[in-house]
Amino acid sequence: MKKIMLVLGTRPEAIKMAPLYHELKLHPDLFETQVCITAQHRQMLDQALKVFNVKVDVDLDLMKEGQDLFDITSSVLLGMREVLKSHQPDVLLVHGDTTTTLAAAIAGFYAGIPIGHIEAGLRTHDLYAPFPEEFNRQVVTKITNLHFAPTAFSRQNLLNDGVPETQITVTGNTVIDALFWVINRIDSDALRLRDVCKFLNERLSFSWQQDRFILITGHRRENFGDGFMQICEALKELAVSYPDIHFVYPAHLNPNVQVPVNSILMGLPNIHLIGPLSYEPFVYLLKHCYFVLTDSGGIQEEAPSLGRPVLVMRDVTERPEAVEVGAVRLVGANRERIVSNVSELIENEASYKKMSHVRNPYGDGKACARIIDVLGKIK
Ligand code: UD1
Ligand code: UDP
Image 1 (cartoon, rainbow, N blue to C red):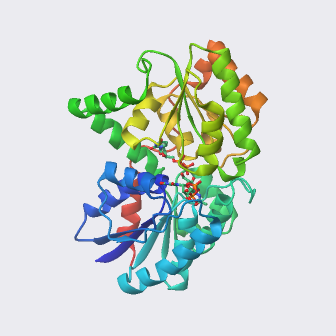
Image 2: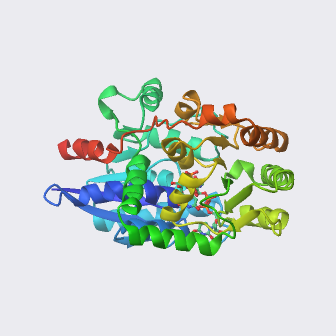
């Protein structure tokens, strides 16, 4: 019996680790599964954990309003020291590239506990984009024993970094497992579907199932300040130019996002500012939107699976697979480029069609089974 501890801190970690948690729980003869949350995010993490019914064993409850990287890194590292001492897991599973991921992996390394890294090998090769995520994942690679790469491309990045081939497994991305799971759950349960639609009807004052709308999210640290001003100014200009198109923006709770978004975009009739959505209504909106404008990592992976084009408000991406298949385009956090690219997709049907076929380079929804297979074989 192996003691496996999953460490999560933010919304995307919860969404992407939840299917793995459930897959581990299916094998109580092989694994004792423990979940430790740092709660680097509080409300947004709890929202995601609730959707997936994840039972938490340890809650460090660390989030502070306006926390910085020093706060999170030090508090996760110190918090994990005690957790690892008292729980003594055989393997510590971390996900992706957040500060929770980095600090929890360092804690595991100091305590001599093998690290499994889910969503390993993503790279931009620019330590400042995204910041600090590119640094976080490169460091985590150094101290990881089991690398679960979502694609052949991320596997190659790991090989280029000198990771031995025997330590890498290509699994697909667990976000596709989560996405399929949630979509099947909504599609197979009329009452659930009714609740999701009712929830969205109460928040959106237009016919979101019929009218064209663009779904927007954004939260990258390197876009704070000027980047967010440009994003908001672009949205304002677009909302005025296209009064028949709706812009739905479930804004991240970070004050660096909330302040510019609310001050620049509040009051425009076709811009709908709502709070972060629970995963089910969010996925349902993703399915119904015309296209997505985002700087998010996870949404670049989900939207192509649903045939929704994505304009990414960044200059580089660690997820080039969807750019290569033509479903994602980089537009930067730049007012002119956002306006011209959004206008093109609204006005030019051929451009839109080219980007909107269902293309999913991120997996078949069986990533977790492949990860379990490897975990089951460790001595
Ligand atoms: C974090 C991750 C980022 C990930 C993102 C997912 C780091 C450095 N950043 O960025 O990689 O893509 O999460 O969304 O690890 N807040 C709340 N409630 C919440 C969540 C956040 O109020 O549920 C506010 C708090 O004021 C908090 C602030 O947002 O201090 C920033 O949260 P933080 O986790 O530091 O950064 P994110 O931008 O969310
Ligand atoms: N998401 C959500 N509700 C929202 C916005 C996003 O559930 O209001 C989901 C989205 O489907 C994806 C994840 O959150 O799975 C992405 O999180 P985020 O953009 O915060 O982080 P990133 O992926 O950039 O690390």
